[in-house]
Image (cartoon, rainbow, N blue to C red; front, side, top):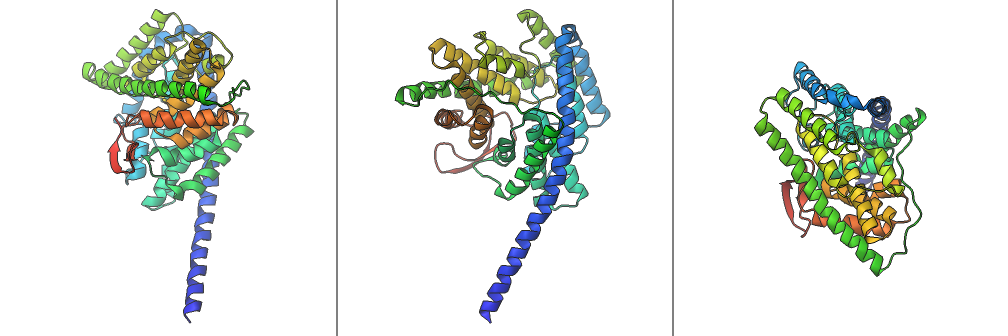
Length: 422
């Protein structure tokens, strides 16, 4: 009799697992298609805005007015207290609600920021876009609190995958970035399916994935590993510098310009003045085309990474919208390329390692950083990426782009600390 009961319990458990699998398979496919379509429209809108700005450089003078329009739109939709990606991260750990109006707000405002020349990315905006759509779909389906967290991560994976074309890293990033040291594996299947589906949708409509393949990778040895290790240490310091300047700029803006309209207008004027001062728009927008140039051995200005940090901090701190991830890649790539040119050690490899290391330092996501290295640069440089990501993760300490991100376990001991990043 006990054997029969045990068999029935096993069968019941297996049936529950299969029902859960089918539920999340269907939800993830539907969400992947929906977010893939929205992400594709977002990507093409961003490309149009960037191309228009490059063709008409004088549009930079409209940045202060663009800031006023963004603030006005958020206030019109009664969403003036938006905290961006931080809201997405905190909602996954709690029962916080993500309003659907975040999606159209971040869509329009990010396109406007790029159109007028603000220095921001797109993948951070995609996380907000996908998280908002996923959370809203979960509300429509009346999912419980725990499932609501999973579907929010699904939306983030789908949007990141559609825009950047890295489905492997996109599937893991939302599970890793929320609570560093704890991976939410219950979201693995939904995030993987949503990521692959969105990537397929984006590919169907002609979006090409980002990739920077190169072949001149030196043989891994104690000498080359020491060079990359030193570069990773420097990149960890650069990532801390970026986080500190980004957060400090936001606090300074709020102190000097308490009014949101004045803050956006003043920030627009500052970024415009900086653009005129440096006499180039190389630091406006996301800058993905300049990252490609670093891999093509184009001369890099020594202070390029510092200027990109300054432009991005002045843009986002003033209330303009967008992401921090592509600017992070720009900062890491320009610094890595500079390191390679000065040291004479494989500039291409140093550029790739710089991108991965700084990204890891600011997001505290070593697994995602390693995976994104494979998808962007290929597998041949694996030992270098592995070493650099590990060093950058440890030495970047408890700094991070997102103030709502939590470090659950110490980076130095097997100790539970549960603390927010600086």
